[in-house]
Length: 589
Image (cartoon, rainbow, N blue to C red; front, top):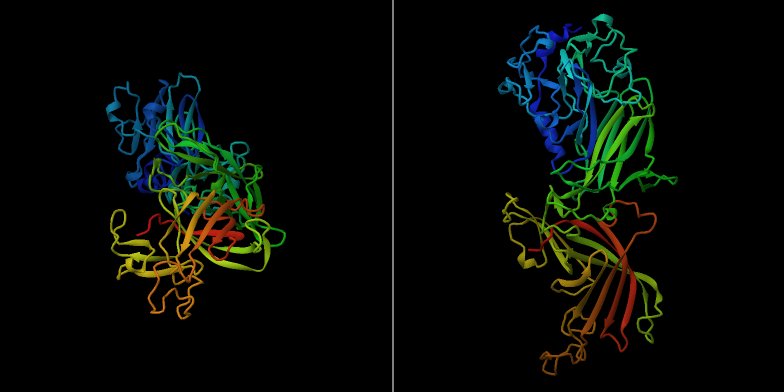
């Protein structure tokens, strides 16, 4: 049993984890935010409120402009070891245990030490007793609940409940052993009345938690989870796909020990951002991974009505989400703050008693933290795959009436796209860790791409070579056109190229040498061959259209090639190709 304290005596036992809040907010990022409006209903006297958004602007002078709001208070838990018995109703700005905001026209304004609001935090707001009730709309960035409890004491905290049908205190904390709701008048559960005094919640099985309100709650030790429904994105404070990721996990857990929980996840729209922040380009096009009737994994479009899963006692549900970057809505920013695709995932139970909102964000690779990058094309990188040729024209025809081959021919394709979206066909490439590349932001070397063995430094590490025997030893061949639309290029096989099929080193009639074994300077006994190659990118089949990797790190299409020089009529071949991006390095050393 932990000691029972009155809420006024326990106020000083609270502490504020500035580092945790800073890290959390920094992880959310200024450039990537999902927006909603929280409405605070303030009554005359004292109001205990809890913010489930990060207000923007966050300056108190900009938020509380109504002259009826006399002050805003936040407990400064750096002084948690000090106890006092001052009633909150008689708090003075000089009190070292509180951070206080006072209006600009207050004569004691110079004593103010609170200037901004932080999301996932609780505050006391005092409204003039002769004022009418008022509403304050806080537009802000949606954030996950931040566990911030003071063990063996009282914490002023809000709880993630649904405003429509919130649970009772007893139900919410039924399987939270750190919080005891069975002590009756000795419960360490307090609501705050208009006089600022704590009122014991003696019937927690009847009294319901109100969304957006803060309560004094005592706990034996720091609770591990914020309520029966625990939500944890793999990205930390958000489902953040950033500029390159295509998959993120959203983990949910039913913390009830003896009760099932039906969990519903619905994608909702983000409000327009506040002025000065990353522009809203549109919703995030989501897919999710699920097993089909054949017990095979497949990606499906996230349904508009949401997803629902029944979790048994203590059961987990990991929802695998993917972003379909190829389905981003085209957007032209109007300012210089950049843009992002933003949504909100509403996670609730079927009874709409619990609610957690998780922000979802994604950006195009050309945008990073709201600033355009000239050296970061969205398709940049090394693409490796294969072409499968299964059609060829008959000798009497040109490029039409292609016939099926007896067996398909598979050959490797290597394509590199630079920072400007220009593509090159490679015969070989070497991926290696280059210790000599120490330019910022690289300090201890980085991976690099090389197309010539002679260019690979001798002290490189983790060297990997990828090559294709389907092409001659050649310099990279520039391809015209646009990646993901159509690329064309010509591979020339010289008459004296060692890979030329008409050149035979030891055949006197096909070695392209005279009787004195001196090589000819032109094609006499061999042929010069030209290969006109076209890669026509196509959309994947219906079974792949919802796959988040397609159009981002996987592409496919039709392969066409016309060879001249082998015979009187050109040789036309066709087939299909697939490419996968294995590196985002956008330059070749």
